[in-house]
Image 1 (tube, rainbow, N blue to C red):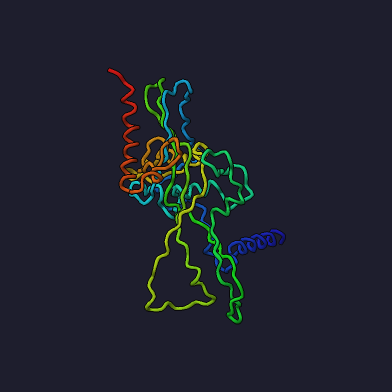
Image 2: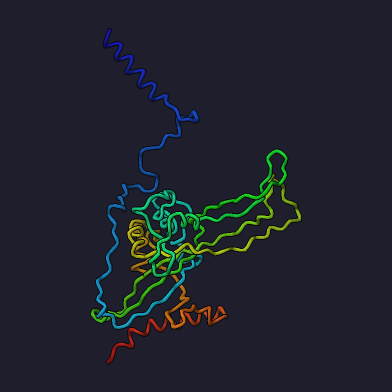
Length: 315
């Protein structure tokens, strides 16, 4: 009789576990404990296998010549699309901007260790406080505030819009090119990376307390885009996060590269020089107004870097 009671109790417990439902009354929303439908094989954990390849040591006495330039990477160019897409996270696939957002981890503003710091100066000596950085990743607009009962305007309120990774449409990078006499070749190294946000400012005058049908004669006029600087990222601090994130390889999807491979070593991106180190610390657009002439000046700087190494040799 005692065994029968224990058996009955066990059956009740199993029945209760099977009949356990979610808060919405459904038993079909339980997460499935298996790998997502992305690969036909067991995918290795990239986080445990990938570390950034360290730079070769360089002595100051071996640097015969160095030059500092600034480039802009426009993600609208087709060759740069692997840095921009996907706009939404898909399995293990993330964009460069999403990788940076995850590294900054603003969902946990009180977290101070294991996150990527953002700096407010080009030399990366002044870290931006986390609270201030949270404000930089959002924008607020004053909109009319209406009484919910009467519909009468009673003042204004702030509408806060959080920026998303897909709104980063370009990057400014600062890099140094130097000639190493120990190896007798020209080398380069990225120093800083600056994400640039580009977003559309909503027309706040059109906000009202009620939903209104658009008029037939109203034109769908797009608001001008606004650019905003997020801050400067010290590239050496960013590399560990880039090395753990794969990027889509357009030539062979089975041989995916990391963002560190793509940016640091293989340089699979298109860019345009907009500034070189100069006495007046000015950009090309500050002394050349025409866009075509600005590109020509950028190509001149690029050609100067290409020929500098060969000019050092004597035969």
